[in-house]
Image 1 (cartoon, protein in one colour):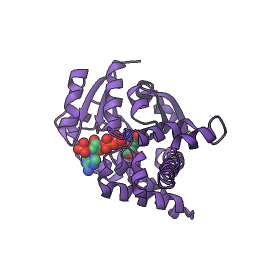
Image 2 (tube, protein in one colour):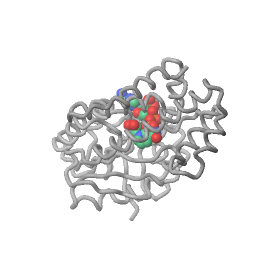
Image 3 (cartoon, protein in one colour):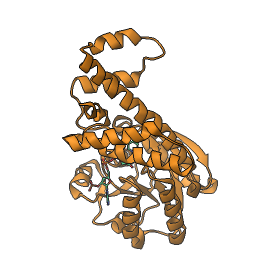
Image 4 (cartoon, protein in one colour):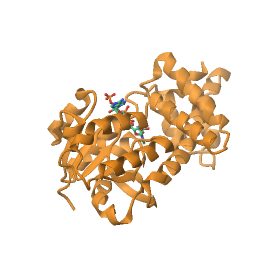
Length: 289
Ligand code: NAP
């Protein structure tokens, strides 16, 4: 199916790639970004530049938010409100807290739009290739309205529930990210220790090669660290720190202690303090020195 009008709010690493794939799929795409220079290059790809959030969502069948965090979403959607069409669908893909998701769902109800809690798995390259995994929760009877959007940006949609306000997709996303972030710090610390102890990292890779401790993610992030290829980021340190704090808080609010995630948030904070905030989260490595 084609022919939807989609308003994309937030054209950072992920939002820009998603907007391009929506254009490629034949949809009319209206983009807005707080810093206009990040939205401007999308015009040559066929997106329409909007002057404001309200302008971006005017005439939109589907609104896609891909912003930094829940506060940014609340602020931008307040600005978008005068342009929202009653009955439109809102695909909310920013990684946010469960409390923010519940507030967004309330706001959607007030505005007469249909809310989908829809965070994504996958980073810059899968986003550019339209190969994200979308975790989605929202009412069955409205899913056909958003499925063309998911098909354009993703390879797979995992439906987790019918009530977006319960945040079932965000819950699963936070669990998955707790694993990804822990793995990222594990890689950074193992390579930092190797450097400190004078161990050739290739000896470490060779030792675990082909066994259950080996993994593609270790090789990809390990190579990026060793070759100093941390810019442009796939997932920036400052965004990863935000997610780490969401994970720690979600655990705390549900009676779960997450010491590793807490230490990980601190590693990201230190890496950012050392000037690596805009680099890929693999720059957690630098927090060891
Ligand atoms: P990004 O490149 O830093 O983009 C963040 C976007 O949020 C930018 O458009 C930024 O605008 C905007 N923004 C931040 N604060 C704002 C505010 N107060 N008002 C208006 N706009 C604001 O980040 P990203 O990597 O695309 O991530 C976007 C979301 O997807 C995050 O929630 C992240 O956790 C999640 N995510 C990321 C990845 C990944 O691998 N990168 C994967 C899955 C999910 P400016 O350009 O003006 O700063």
